[in-house]
Image 1 (tube, rainbow, N blue to C red):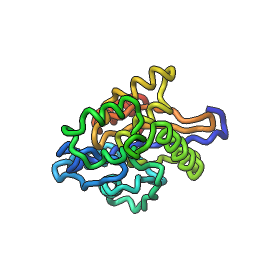
Image 2: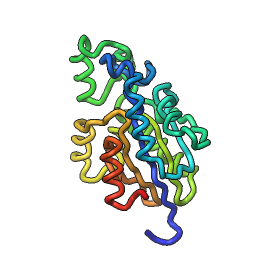
Image 3: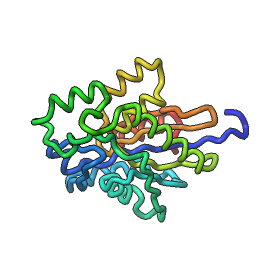
Length: 219
């Protein structure tokens, strides 16, 4: 990297598994549920995986499940997270809060089209624009060499991959629609003056730690 070029690493963590995740309730931007008690161990695993990363800042979705996850990840750090509306989950409109099994066909049709506007929700292009806006703001507010913790959502991460992943647009699109995004999973995005790059796709904490260390990306 050229001398004087600003570089920022973003550690993206999906929130822990919630009661709605467990009970198979569609959960987008308009509904929220607390983390399931049995999921807290996985979030603490993520905290340990990131334990020796010195975070300069933390940005979090305004939804409670992300804020609850961030509070666990930041325990003992004395760092106050900044709520960033553009990090909220994909808005599934009136399908939000519905039982997945009963609304599977409607949800799946919209998911394949990446467009929930027929139910009053968002289209994928809107979510993609929010991802670009969020990362541009976080990068602008960071200093060269900062590590930034980002706590957000699974469907939103698909657009992080679509926007910043490697490969042709069609390859990124297929990957974004088929990737599994585990609760409390971690990914690494690096930003510099030429753009943003997904360096490590979202992985479970132990897998992420091994991958990032193997690439020399984390201490």
